[in-house]
Amino acid sequence: MSDTIQAAFYHGDRTFAVKDTQAQQPDAGEVAIRIAYCGICGTDMHVFHGNMDARVGFNRIIGHEMSGVVSAVGADVDHVTVGQKAVVRPLAHCGDCPACDAGHMHICHNLKFLGLDTDGAMQEIWTVPAYTVHTLPDDMRLDHAALIEPVAVACHDVRMAELQPGEDVLVIGGGPIGMLCAMAAREAGGKVTISEVNQARLAIAEKLGFETINPKETDPAAAINEKTGGKGADVVFEVSGTQPGVDTMTACAASRGRIVMVAIHAVKPQIDMFQFFWRELKLIGARVYEPADYEKAIALVASGAVDADTVITDVSPLADIQSAFEALDQSPTALKSLIKVGETL
Ligand SMILES: [Zn+2]
Ligand SMILES: [Zn+2]
Image 1 (cartoon, protein in one colour):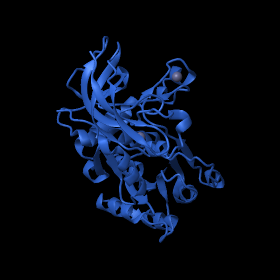
Image 2: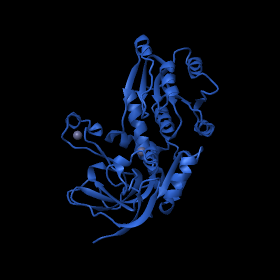
Image 3: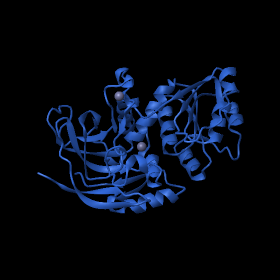
Image 4: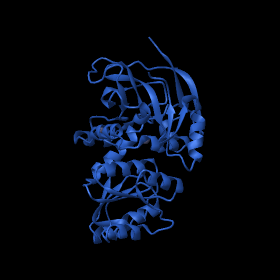
């Protein structure tokens, strides 16, 4: 039996082609999911810009921020049944390296990211290893569920920070991940301020109920010190990936403050190392997520602690994936764009 499905192939040079292809049938230990929605990630935008051609090649179906409904299961799969709503934690580990041996499968030395190193979710049926599948409550909206992957990033960041209720938190950078970090930190009891230069994003942050700083107008360290009685932020999330963001993170952290490095700094920034000595700061790396972060993210989306309707700013059908990427690339106001890949119900 084979199913003809639609899929969006990245062909290089900022180009997608939506074509018919054959759905992959699930082998033993695999699950096929009929995809409802797939969000466009910053990483997908890097692919679009041609920055990852060597890794993804020129005939790749990308996409990993998805939601859908299980359509078939292979042999030896018992935690998932056909008809369940589901999301995928898009990490395939080797099971045979020092990181895997230590239980840190999400930073496996040979980690494969599904949707970059393998075909992803911008296709009507996506077949994945069963251990990557998390099932969802029946009443969860599938457009909202497409946020679970980036929310899980935020949940991992907050967990790595060991954030305690009542602590002062600064999020540097109010893009999608920064905004979700702020929501996850607030749900954990943090008193959150977002620093961001883009006016549209500042407006969204305020609509979501966060205090904001525009570093073009106000010195972030002065603002945080005023808010905290001169103490500084107990936890700082660096989500901007910029040199000014790195300067702000050391300037705003409290004594013994924890700084979580969320952004991917492609260029080595200059860091004020003296502050790590003087105020006993801690710098914490955080990469993707573990299963517990996915379960937490599902709970946050289900409870409404993540305001999905405000975060999702655009939805386009799969046939319009090309224009959706072009529009997101140009838009100063978009936060999270979803592709509606197919009908599921
Ligand atoms: Zn992503
Ligand atoms: Zn491994």
